Image 1 (cartoon, rainbow, N blue to C red):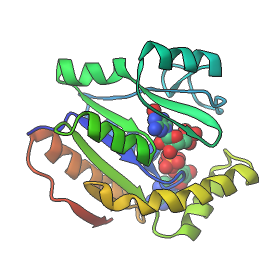
Image 2: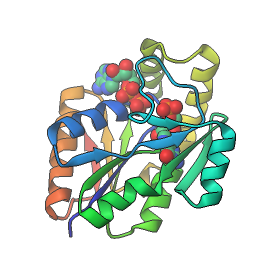
Image 3: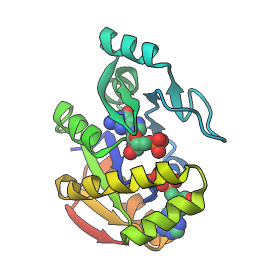
Image 4: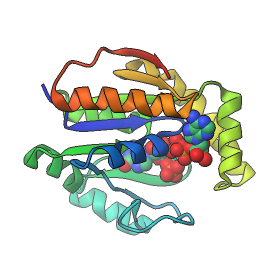
Length: 197
Ligand code: ADP
Ligand code: 5GP
């Protein structure tokens, strides 16, 4: 059976945005599920493309209207998957890629058990994760510490995923991700397991 919803999760800094961008560039039929968030916009991000940036009141209103399929409070901000983004995948037969935290990934699988492929992008080590976060220069030291603490919890959930991609050499990771997603889009059963890329 074809998987229309490709869900990527990873500790912050492990490389899932890089993987998601590669998949979007490779597969023209794939769209990115734009999440809603209350966090501040980063340099280079575009409202409506990377996230829909909402105030806390607007986010709460979206929850009450039932516009969100799942949402979590992460690092003091709300993040949630918009129902409208998933509908396009399910009803029109499009392929949709999600960048959500581990709890969001498991919620999407519960909501659409036959239609999801869950991929966990793991860093080769916690030291490498910290280096990548520091070199990205998008968070303060305090925010980096918060993200590393959360990474431990996220790593503990990786075995619930269909596939774990260890992102060491970037090109190998991108090649493995491309192959796994191509198979899922064609409907061939992806062998669950660990891919040391
Ligand atoms: P995430 O979306 O999981 O927070 P990013 O995709 O933003 O992570 O990656 C974090 C940083 O690490 C970025 O600066 C990215 O360019 C870099 N990066 C990603 N994968 C690798 C890799 N395999 N080797 C070295 N650097 C990488
Ligand atoms: P960032 O602030 O780095 O963009 O994202 C922080 C975390 O929020 C990441 O783990 C990201 O995957 C997660 N996230 C982004 N959108 C959503 C969403 O819609 N739902 C959930 N549950 N997590 C999300």
